[in-house]
Length: 264
Image (cartoon, rainbow, N blue to C red; front, side, top):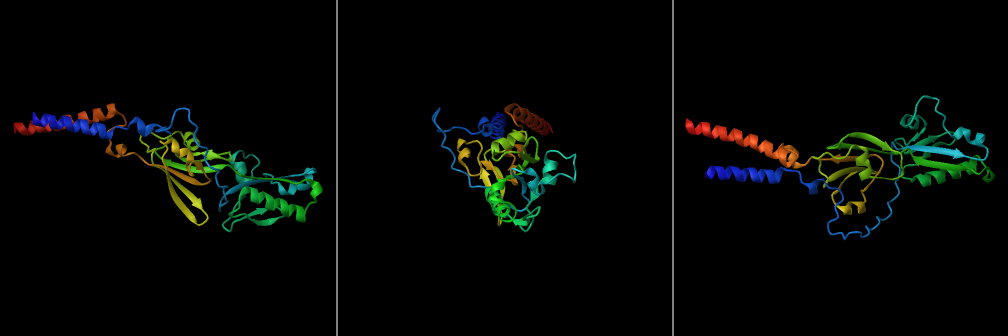
């Protein structure tokens, strides 16, 4: 009888500790937040500063478009390329020295600059060396999408690119098939590039406060890691039913061994 109670207690303990709870699966929970209350707007993000291997899209326009044709790349390398491939051939990659090569302008150092500062720099050079103010030069500089890599407990791991100026981590996760039921939403790891190296950051996506985190918005070349919950390593099941079924199997095997040993 004592053994039976011990076994039942063991089953109950493992079931409680090994199931993935709803609280572990729910995004942006509003604990302590009054219903219909405003969520404070996140302070303005620091503008992204360019790093080595960033890809830029640069276009120059003027009243006489033929006069600026030399500055706008034409995809001769692969005329059939589309989408990301076209950006690869037509874009301007920041090399290991922090430079991009622009037709006629040559090497232009952009390392550590924002896209707006790059635009101003190119526009100023064009007006000083090639055109007069009457030409109405209009320069557009954009990052060729926000590329990020996501691995771990995610539906579709791998590298993705989103053609937006701003992308939240929730959008990035949704674009990658959502976090698996065994993924740890409370401790999502973000490895971010900085001019002097990389830093590791953490964000809790189960809390509404995540929206105020400086890591809520994805930066180019972010590596997002979704680590597994302890329940996965235990192998006891994702849901209560799966866990109960696994425990019953183990207990049945244990009971059989116990009965056989007492008969010997």
